Amino acid sequence: MICVSVLAPVYFIYSLPGDVPAISKEEMIFNPAPDQFNIYKTASEAVEKIFNYERLSVDIALTIIPDVQVGNFPLGEATYFDCLFSPSVD
Image (cartoon, rainbow, N blue to C red; front, side):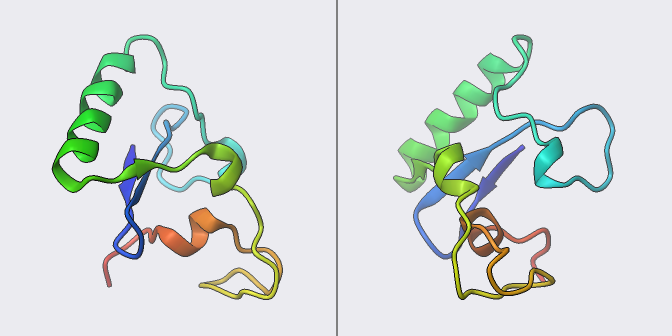
């Protein structure tokens, strides 16, 4: 899955373990499987070239932002990933 932020010029890539309708950050797979690598590489290159976005590292994406509340995450539990990417466009 490739997530593109509408708030900052960044994107993030992760995989899901099988057919999982809802997933927690702990279940995300950050290195694509070998059979998916070329697909993610091609998509990443397109996002970078077309939108001039940078890939957000796992370390930064999972960093907790103190004193921020977003969605259903209480103060002190939201990460950059939670703040920059939304599961819906509502």
